[in-house]
Length: 147
Image (cartoon, rainbow, N blue to C red):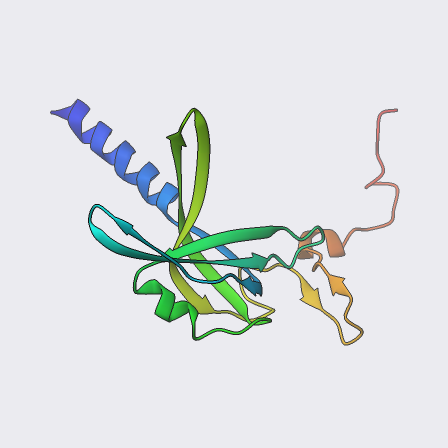
């Protein structure tokens, strides 16, 4: 019984961490809605792109399916969003495709807790310096290197 408890605890902790993927950024593009007919009926899909607000910004294309498309229609280009998503890969004709499927979209702000960068009045992004580095002393006891 002990081994099963360990296994379920391990799986639960790692699945929860894997499934809690979030990314914040600026909405830069909303692609046209796509529809089609599948074996389960008509499907709807829409993709959108956000750009992270880091020193080296990344662009990520997400997709939403079905009723989540209505949630996406509330937002406009330039809005800061926080997107919770899952990643899924699938194989088709010997090639692999990966989707970032958004399951929760909400408005965010520039100085959100997930974005460590702060924008100044001049539009320059600055990363805050941690307190432990801001109080470095400039005496010989700190520079006591053996070489």
